[in-house]
Length: 503
Image (cartoon, rainbow, N blue to C red; front, side, top):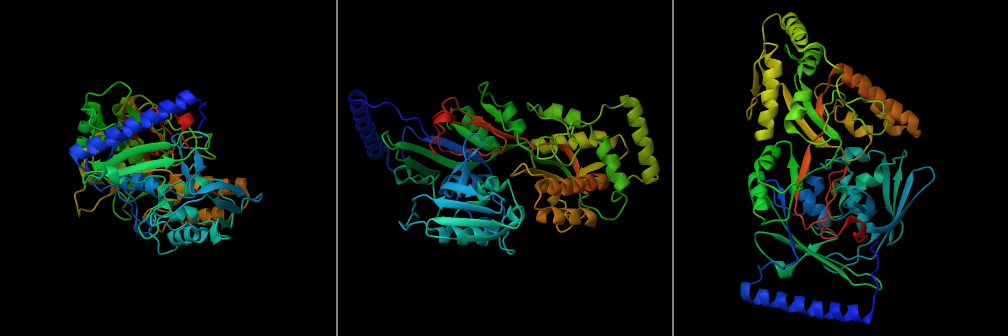
């Protein structure tokens, strides 16, 4: 909650005079410049991406970065993330979890849809239940497999019933994929700001009344741009915040002239590496995949990107996630480079019988992908292999995975490689995942998932490289921005320190 400032007559008079000065200035600006004139206190935010930052139904498919920002800004869920990545109230003002962890009960706070209709628990239950249908293309639907039912108990109370405990449920419900959207209308915390209307921007305002204190009012304007344009706008001071940066556009930010502390990195967990696509041919054997994985100089690649805290990784699970405390992400110390190279080359000749196949890798367009491709050309080229970027419509041997984990659960990592999702898989690993989904004892569930991860690593169902890279550009006047492990950055409270964020 916000700290309540002391009140006295002098401060009250100053606030009143300040309000009228601001109001007159805003009115004058609108009169001179038209309705597209920006309010002085608005923060301009650019999200890197091709889609516009508009409300989009997660039922219809994965959300782009601009769509995610729009959803978490204008269509919050029962709970949401604050600037530090912690769970705070969204539509629900409070919640309780049963002792057995099988029931989450949420009490909705007062709220209305944009058309003025009260938000009821039945509305929320209907939206969430729809997102969890088997026909839903919601990217996070599979993570909610333990949900048995979503029930409206009263107009203000909603219950989520589970078949097995899920301690990470609140983290999932805070994701933009589970924002509450009805008839393309959101639930806040921001609403459209007609005073800032501009065809090039999505203009939003946030208002919160504080008991015995001044109301909170914040304005932002958001739009999407290419990485090059977003960085240029920030460098010239035309925007105060850039969101949605990945490894692929990081070189663009590196080349710009920025203030020392402008470039910020989120210490996210997730998957960044290569997914095998072939089930036949010389590159389809586990021996070939293991050789290719061992040949990648992960340390050199990580050093090239030069991201604080980023370490090379040769494991499916990331160190720090639940049950992975013993994982060492950095590969074991390597022998003499010349000896290692000779050994790998000999192994490649024996494996491929000197009939070296080309290796085609599906990567996005961008300078970061070119850096990765060049690294693979060096490392796999030492084996005698020619590495090519797979073009549109071309068959590929490997595809890049670059995804942030929505929670710290190992289930998300291993379930990316079940047989219904990927070509290289193991039925035994799938069976362990199924057992983990129904396990009611946390230690047992963790054991199932850890064993599934071990089997998938032996099969080299994934060639890990490091954790994903996520970056932002942050202006000096935004003390409310904080790097966090979930990589989510709500627009509420950007102008104030995190301790004063209104929740």
